[in-house]
Image (cartoon, rainbow, N blue to C red; front, top):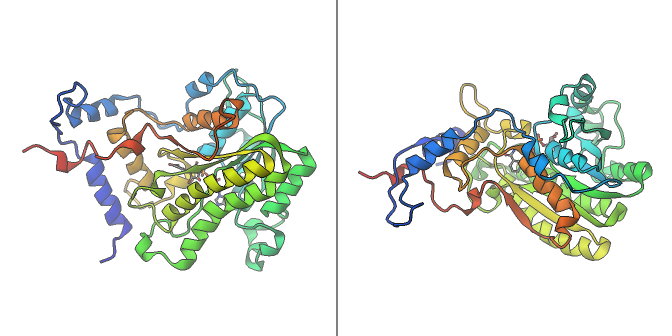
Amino acid sequence: MMFRVSLLVAALSAFALSTTAFVPTSKNAIATRSSSDYLSNAMNQVRSSSTSSTSALKMAAGVDLKGKVAFIAGVGDSSGYGWAIAKALADAGCTIIVGTWPPVLKIFQSGLKKGSFDEDAILSDGSKMVIEKVYPLDAVFDTPDDIPDEIKNNKRYAGLEGYSIAEVAEAVKKDYGKIDFLVHSLANGPEVTKPLLETTRKGYLAASSASAYSFVSLVQKFGPIMNEGGSALSLTYIASEKVIPGYGGGMSSAKAQLESDTRTLAFEAGRQYGIRVNTISAGPLKSRAASAIGKEPGKKTFIEYAVDYSKANAPLAQDLYSDDVGASGLFLCSPMSRTVTGVTLYVDNGLHAMGMALDSAAMARE
Ligand SMILES: NC(=O)c1ccc[n+]([C@@H]2O[C@H](COP(=O)([O-])OP(=O)(O)OC[C@H]3O[C@@H](n4cnc5c(N)ncnc54)[C@H](O)[C@@H]3O)[C@@H](O)[C@H]2O)c1
């Protein structure tokens, strides 16, 4: 029988929310605490609905990226990881330019103009991040020839041109000559709410195209305009290697591709352009994109379950802010990681390391 997402999410919910005690046999001090202790600790951590915190930014002060240019693909508001990485790089003095998906371009530009993101743009010295230029970018198109008429004639793309990856790279070259950092912070899976068992070929390939090949294509097209010593970075998720019910539609497959491609691109682009290629496996964040997964009226979304599950079960029972990932992104771009390439860096409060869920009902003692 096919699983329905609501069932999967309900199962995840029961799994995540159970608070029955776990009494392990080991005698060491940490192990003799019950899982309910861990849980209550987790729940006592500072709660915040905000996705960002500037404390991570302050810690990163001291890295100097003045004179460097970063192109961040996949920024459409201030709630996600792309914005946070842009902010951390800007805090280090880097010039920021972004690529924004045409369907959200107008609303993003008008938000920028109206100052809707100002509060989330504050840097550690109190100034505001400046996004020097916003390029329309649809990362499923490599060249203008790939764009079908239904997209060209779509009203969300009306009046726009030059949004394929090759054209954006050309425009950036014209405007800035060379860049130093390329960040891929985008993903899209039209069938993400379907289990893999129900995913169509079309949906699966669309997830791969938007979420994995887009990075290969960006590195292909931007590699030639990147300075030696530069760095390319993407964002992945643990569902690539462990089963995360609810993260469907071939998105888990796309993230596995992204991680594998990171290694191969690290070799190829390292030899060809002298740049580094890494990916961050980020913990759950309630971004706009993530909030759209499994949205059913009156119910918690997939990402809300994932955030609660992480707090209840990760080694570090603390909130994860987008700025935490921003700071790690800054590290992977800065000379501090000069010899780091081809890695998947977990920035997830350590959740990836766990093999058992502390709050599982199966751990309950009679
Ligand atoms: N939020 C999480 O919990 C989480 C966890 C791990 C990894 N990630 C990854 O982080 C990255 C950023 O996502 P986020 O959650 O911060 O949300 P986000 O909404 O900030 O970013 C996703 C962006 O992708 C853009 N996009 C979608 N299709 C596109 C296309 N064809 N061309 C260009 N842009 C396109 C959207 O407009 C949006 O701006 C993604 O790769 C995501 O899978 C997120």
